[in-house]
Image (cartoon, rainbow, N blue to C red):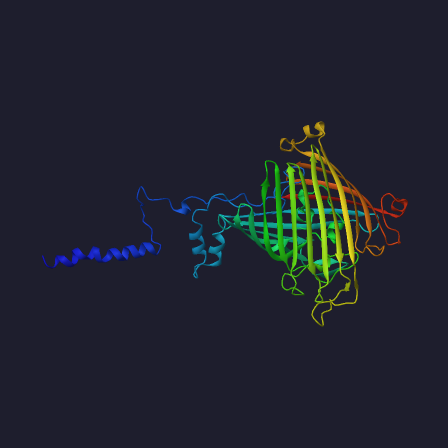
Length: 463
């Protein structure tokens, strides 16, 4: 009988080891009937994911920020356990990548052009291909990234020679939702000067070309490294207010007539001075379909503290099938030179910096259908429509002088959108510059006598 005691004690000695094995990840082959379900047995819930607002098809007066990452209303089951597994030192890269598939969404958009200018050579252009990645990290944390390949990336062949092309992170942020009306954002941020820079995605626009002042004075796509806050809240029963405010590296001294601020967009690696620019936008929507915004920017552009100050106003108004939209921007620049970079940098020149810039556009879009035409189309296209557009715009990248940077343009456009994510666009514009010393305006005879035309067609799609 005495020899049986060690055998009776053996289960008691092995019990702690069994519990330890369970703590290290061992699982029972047959769980108890009342045991809770493991997180991996049920796929985690996701937020809505990235969504581009299509102008003319969705609410333009909603959040107002392109590619703004939404936040889920309920926690993602098993989130912390999954991240612990991904951070284990012995986890391979493939295992870590596979673990994000349950909460990461991949999408994007693309645009392909055909350009026929009166002055120049016609060409097809693989204009841009943009990948968009959105991931919901937790209930209050999300990240969104936009990667653009412009003209098929790099290398780029121009004038028979291969050179560097463009592959850029145009938007890459991580959002931390603090309250229902305040989110902290950090990363590569779309500068909120005007509405167009925030909503520049090709499938959302009715015309294939961007407003000229919103490629120079506001250098769309204008992105900067920085951090700040965004959010919104209701003002009474119908009114809605949205805001964004950030501190960013800001513009440098490469500010030139004709190009505007395009070459002065800040570096994601370093700032050329210790000053951080402040930029922000506030928009109000008194009712669905009407939004008005006011935005600004202020920051030093060189080591001497010379500053750029900018103010922009924008409006969008939907009246049934008619959309009216427009923006105006004015920049005030302290006199200086294209300098302020490290000593020995070839970016330092004695080129004069313009002291002021100005631009605006006004656009009308009218949606309509031709019923006999749509009856001939496949069933899934029966809800499609045409859009006719008219836009007048001007830019002045040096308000002190009349130069080739002064441009006036009148554009007529027609597009066909069989489905919300796919659009065929065409446009014809007439423009004149101030290179002859005469300020261009459509109401002057010189505009029509000395101007020239361009035809541009494109296909844009969202996926």
